[in-house]
Image 1 (cartoon, rainbow, N blue to C red):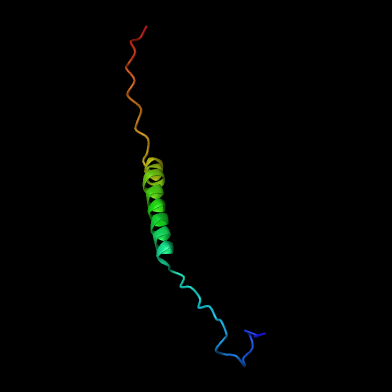
Image 2 (tube, helix red, strand yellow; image 1 turned 180 degrees about the vertical axis):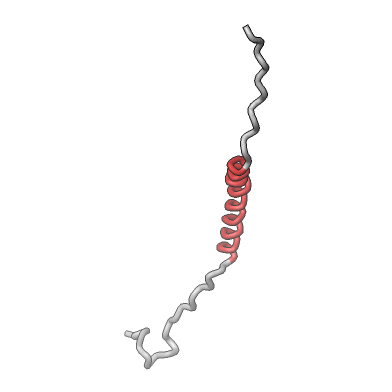
Length: 68
């Protein structure tokens, strides 16, 4: 029986090379994730921050009532 982990048989040793971290699918998922985050910030947080930062409009003037 062949011991594949044994250093006496370097020809039979099986060493899998590590996969690169940035595969094409991970790049695609990262681009989609960044697009979703930008869309969320643009459509939800930006109008919310704009509404909070703007002071409310002044109330309309009340008509002067005649004296009774």
